[in-house]
Image (cartoon, rainbow, N blue to C red; front, side):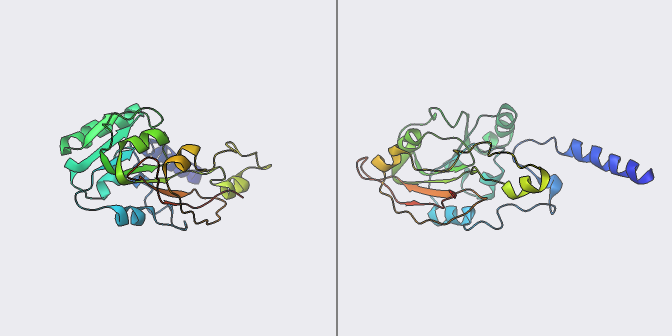
Length: 220
């Protein structure tokens, strides 16, 4: 009985700690792994594309935790977030630093002038290809990492029997027709059944030309 009471106390404390804002998982630090077995390194890819004077936009920034870890000059950073509690957090933490923050949905118009950014970042957020293209400078890069249809299927198979169908069976990162008409593509495939793809789009100097694409294909 004492053991059960101890477990209940721990679980209640865990429940309170898990009421988080932004993208901060510090309350379970050391107890989980994130992106350690992916065939790419999102942050390393970003670093290769980042230069000191780059204007960058982070879409669906959460609480700005990843963005701030880049230590890029705040005056060159813009960010968007749509979830109201996270947006409120961004106004408290990012705006005082001089970061240009806007509460905005990723799948709608972006509140920025055309050809503003050298680099647009999007980790697991919605986006409109046309809007991303519009706000990128000629030669700019869009770096995105998305959650695929088969994300965490190994975990699901351990916890649920029978295993349910894929909740979003069409959720693979396929290049929209818009990218084919506005970007030059160079595709290298890496088959991955659980994790999501990483995509780099480079905006061409003319819309009729297009961009370099590197991506990992999660389709079976």
